Image (cartoon, rainbow, N blue to C red; front, side):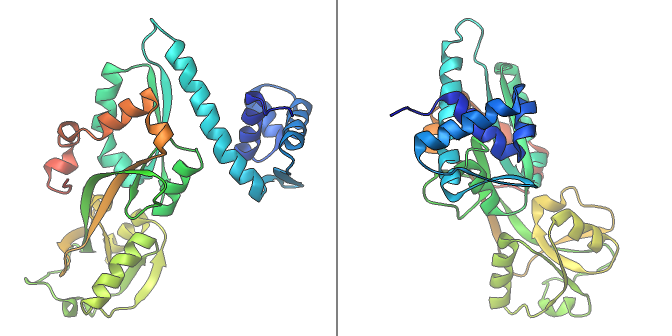
Length: 304
């Protein structure tokens, strides 16, 4: 029985990521027919249909999704072997991080700057488009990122290391005069906007249990959009503290009547975490001294 070849796996990943044979051919600088032939051979070798083809492009089948996850791991390991053999030129490699926008903005810069000084050959790419905790974990599990910085809880099959935490806060218009101690009743005349993500919904459930009864006047998918609406004086919301640092124009941050935090964790597949470049990036990103030098940490917004 023939075994899958690395170049076939590379082409499968390219088609899945770009959505078509033509785009994959352009990315890999080869012909479309070569990619088609390689995928056909791979499907015959594995005895399964890996892609569905339509006028709008290609998408992985259920079997294709499982093969893709393994293919990404194999390609990373192959790249790691090449890096290990590159003696005398310094450590080189590419590490991808999936995270929330607020983490990429306020937590990572100091660590990546320090990393670049000591390991200039390690390239770190950041996907900060994740809005849901599941998106971060899925990017790691599917091999689209070597490291994730996600919100707990996450899937048990990933390596999980506790990281920093921030708090959920009330985000109110700047003109709103809160009286201490703040009560939910003080907010009754102001519309409530809900951030529509699993983390915010979990905190909302905690607030409901503590007597919060307001129903959302609208829901929005991104924290920046919610903050913009609050800044116009239209409503208030409950958001993670990092999401409104520094405070946007027209916005004030007030402690919630209850304590509610967002606990982050560093995520990786166990085998991937052992790759030298990935291990080094994890050590820099998780370095308490380096992270402690970030403006957000110095402002008291983050805790270990």
